[in-house]
Amino acid sequence: MTPTPTPGTLANLARVPWDGGPAYWAKFPGAAKLNDPNIFPVGVWYGKPSHAAALKDVGVNVFHNAEHDGSPMSLITNTGMLVIPGGEWSQSEVGTNPGVVGWDTDDECEMVGLGCGNVSAAQNLQVMKDLVAQIRAKNDGRFAAANYSKGIFGTFWAPGLMDDFMAAVDMSSNDQYFYTRADLQFEADRTPSWPSGASVKTAAAYGWVADRMRFYQSSPGIKPNWVFVESARPFLESSADRTITPEQMEGAMWSAIIHEARGINIFQHNNDSQFGTYSLVDIPADRKARIKASLTGIQSLAPVLNTQSYVWDAGAAGADTMLKAKDGSAYLFAGIGLKGATGSKTFTLPAGITGSQVEVVGENRTIAVQNGKFTDSFANEYTHHVYKITI
Image (cartoon, rainbow, N blue to C red; front, side, top):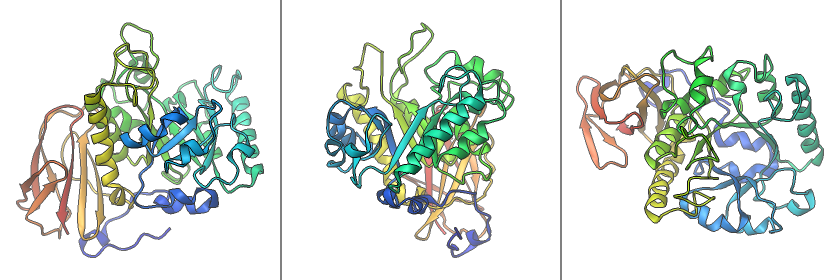
């Protein structure tokens, strides 16, 4: 789609390729409820239907798959939540329910010997194509989705075919639990695209996932990519595995968004004895409140996030940034990049922006702009800030 020109200096900047935002879903009549600039998709993986209201309260708005436990689909959608059900849900159970916007295919199908269970990536790819064909045959206007995993590492999991897996469906997600899985450092270190010496136990690693998904698209960002973030300890058994903190979770989500993720999926299933199996629901009130605050912060910026980004290097060493504009203001989103350091960072604004101070969104403070630049501090590797300035 042709982007709407922004008045002033930003009109001269190139745009980051993308899928068109909420308007992408207009291609699918059954997904009309996603075509809303005030919604940034935050999904939960295999949520329990009876938890719909509780999940909505914490900030989730999509069930990416839903437990098929005999509950009617309306138990979820009557709360206003949207659903991308899996194949265990029949077409008759789903019917014309407008809250059901897509269909899921399979989980991690690209992984040779795992995924769809075949010993070659080509066989798994055919399974995926067949599943998509079955969804198309429903002719109900809903899109086809898939969750992928280690194929983005570019090693032996989906040799030479990851781009075909990405192209087979209408939206993709990817699950890498970098903060909590100890063995993922080994996986990353043998991956050609992973920066040598970078730690996976950083928020920036989740931004790397978004980059890798776009890398395997024929035109980067032509279809929506959602990135998984864990909310506790995702059924891990090694003594070296860990439970994510709410602060790390928030940083990971924002890193993925800064790297153009068009949605977030949360893996809530947990085997840390501190919390229940459903770690967005069965958790202490203080932890739930912290996660809710993070998701509220993301959702409050949905109208901005659902605009096309500008290509802009803010010049802050070791920082990842994303530049957007909405209603006469520019928004610079910033976090620490892979191998980046904490501490002070100085950001350069595009020439022509004349605002004398930036508002740090959600932090009740402002920073003076001098000669088109401003400086701020990043205390932890997961620290992120959103800066708003009049164009």
